[in-house]
Each structure stands twice: as C-alpha cells, then as structure tokens.
Length: 121
Image (cartoon, rainbow, N blue to C red; front, side, top):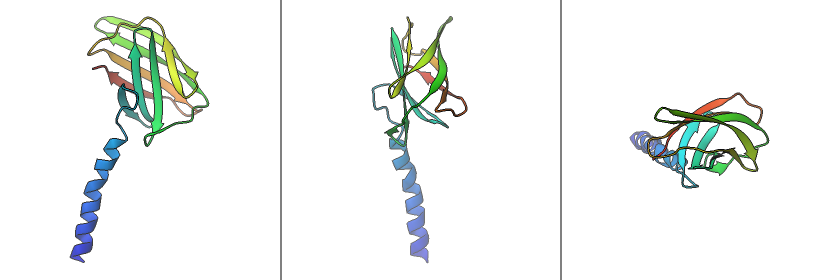
C-alpha cells in the first residue's frame, strides 16, 4: 500500500512538468493561457498575429470576432482582428517595444469572448 501511495504522489508531482511544455511559444512570440486555449502573440510594427492552440496543437478556427488594444506609455492603439486561415491578424501602425502591453478580446468559433493580456519582452 505504501508503494502505491508513493507511486501516486510521484506521478501527480510529475504531471505539471509536462503541462508546462504546452505553453511555450511556437512562433517566437509571447504566450497567454485563456479558457479558449493558448494564444501566442507575434508583433511587428505593421501587423500583429495571434495563433491559437489547445494542448500545443493548432486550433481549427472557423470564425472569430475581436479586437486588439496596444498600450505603450500614454499611447493607445486599437485595431480589429480578422481571421486569416489558421490565425488572427490585426494590421496597422503599432508602436512596439519592451514593456508594451497588448490586450486581446476575441470570440472564437461562436463561443463567448475571452480576453488575453500580453507584455512584450
């Protein structure tokens, strides 16, 4: 019985180590975990891309409605998100740098909207 309890405790403590691997960036961006899945933000001055995955596998996106808000100091820029294949895109002229905060509000595949917050490194 002691062996069973010890084995159960070891397995339970090892599980979070595997789960942490699911949240690593796959496209060189910054990852945030949401109820809808993991969102990875890849930011460039002319375009912001959001990749959505669930357990490290790309999520099939059939519809999406949302917007991004970029906060950099006192500057605030909003842009709509559009579905572009397997990702979401916002186009515009964005002021980006270390510490820039980005708020994403999006409803995916007809489900309720979720919010994700990112801080650029």
